[in-house]
Image (cartoon, rainbow, N blue to C red):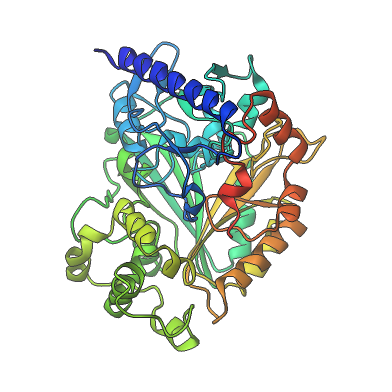
Length: 496
C-alpha cells in the first residue's frame, strides 16, 4: 500500500475508535478525558505526563509517513510523527526545505506545531506553524477537519500551541523554499550582550536580512551575532568548513567560543553543509550535554534520578555544587568517549527517565519578549538566573488570532519582532527552580512577553488565563465537543 493509502486506513481506524469512545461516554458519566499517544518516546516537552494516568489512550503512533512532496507547489504533506531529520532529508532531494527547521533532529512535525517551534529562519517566517499551509485534525465526534487560512481559520489559529487539546493532529501541509548545499556563516562578536540584541533586531528589520539569524550570549562580556547565507559550495572555495559529524567534534556553541578566542573577537566566516547547519545544536542539545562531562554529576543523574538507588540531600543544588558543575569544554578524547550520550534524542530520554531530579535542578525555558522591552528583560536575566550561554532568536511577530502564539503582536499592531531568550542550564544561585521560574514568568508578563509552554510552568490558572484568551479557547472547544473528551490545556502545561 502507498503511504497515502495507509494514511487513509489509519484515519478511518481513528475515526471509528473515537466514535465508539464518544458513544461510551454518553452511557457512562464522569469518565476521564482521552489521552493522545504518539508513541514517539522522545517528546521534547519537559513537563510531567502524570495527567494521563488512568485515562484511555488513543494510539496515533502509526502516523509517521511523508505523504507527498510537490516540487511545483512547493508543499510537503506529512503525518505528525515525521521527524525533522526525515523531513529535511526528503525535501533536500528536491532542492527544497521547510522555511523553519527546529534544531533537534527528532523533533516531530506534530510537536513543532502543537508546541510551537522556532529557529534561525524565524526573523523572516515566524514560527514553524506560520510556514504551514494547512492542518488536518479529528474532532470528538470523529469528523475530519481541514484548517487553513481559507477554511476553518479559527482552528488554523487555534491548533498551534494547543498541545492536542482540540483533538489529534493527523496531517500537515508544510510550505517549502528553494535551498542550496551550504550555508556561509558570519560571526560578529561584541563585548556587550545588549549590542547583540539590538543588532539582531536591526538585522531582522532590514529587507536584505540574512537567510538565517540567531545569536549567543557566551558570558556577560562576550556575545555573538550569527548570520547565515545560502550558497553553492563552489562559490566559497577559500572558507573553512565546520561539521559536528566527526566523533571528537566540539558542540556548536563551544566551536563558536573557540572562534572568538582564536580570532581575538574579530569577525570570522566559515561554511557548513545545510543539513549540518540546520541541526548544529542537536549535538549536546545546545549545551545541556556539557554538564554531563562532570562524571560525578552524570553518576548522580543515574543513581538518584533514574535508578533512585540513593536519595539527594536536598531538592536542588547548593552553592558549592553550582560552582562545581558549571558548563565546561572537555578535550577531544573526552568528547569522543561520551559522544554516544550527546545527541539530543538520548539526552531527552535521560531527562524523562530522571524527570523530577532534573526539573528541580536544570532550567530549560524559552521566553519570547517584544522588541520594545527585550533589552529590559535581558538586563534581568544576566543577573537572575545568570545562566550562560543564552540563545537569542529574533522572531517575526504574528497579527493573526492565534490563541497560544508566544510571538503574538499587540492588538492594532500589524508588524514587529520578538526576541526569544533560550535559558538552559543551572542557575547561578542556590534556590528552588520553581521560585526562579516564577520570577521570570512574572517579569515576562510585566514586559508583555510570553513563554513557550513546552517547559515547566508555574502560573496559577487565573494567571494563565490573564495571558491567553480563555473565551476564544473554550468557544472552540465547545464548538467541536472537545470539552471533557480531550484534556484541557491547563491539565497539560501547568505544573502541579
